[in-house]
Image (cartoon, rainbow, N blue to C red; front, side):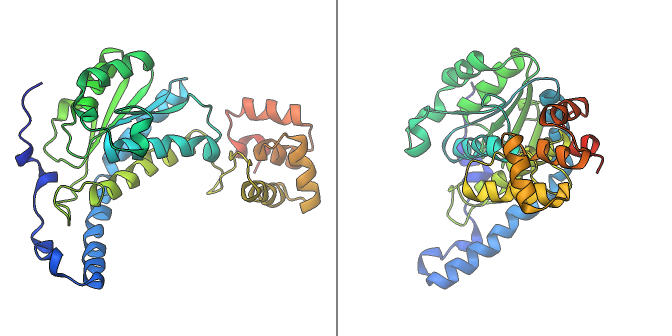
Length: 298
């Protein structure tokens, strides 16, 4: 790859608003950073149409049996790890349906592994082992030039996967991925520290990609998390409330139905609304493509 001119990257620039950062009081620093964070919100808002196109592409791949990969290094990679980890409990995804690929491997999730982001061969190798035609690969690189991520996206395209780049560099090459989500957050309060505004804007974008995609795939009813995995006391209580409210049954009845449905709120709700067995409810859900409203008639 061509030599990267890091000094020209927008993510490396100095923010004139924070020029006297080291001389400000704690309260003044907090107010300054809060004002700066508004740049992240605005940047994601401006990118909403492009994010929507990315969601549509992800839905098409996941709906066809493909998988979703998040690839990144450093803060960007850790944000991808968080997003992938949250999908099974939130949307009841299978373990391999949403995956994270982190430069430097598992150990770099908890501790910085110097130089991992520069290893383009490792990025290509990681995707070569995992991705295939019909998958969606989301590269996450605040600078837009991270070698590990760029090589991963090149390899993903070579293997027939759909590629998306989330970056805070508006000058990132449009050919870096099929869809480039460029978030114009501006320079950081602490120059070059892309865990700040860039990280915030990236997290907001990833939240939208997964939430919107799985909503379109029937994992949500209204604004309710009906496909959650009730594996904690809090989530069990939430599932019971969902069954009681959407199934229009008493709390004791909701608990019994949830037990019969082996913890699936969607199955229990269909059982309650259609007066059917768990097996019959599962069949109705399959026929409805997983959409609770169609299966339960609500």
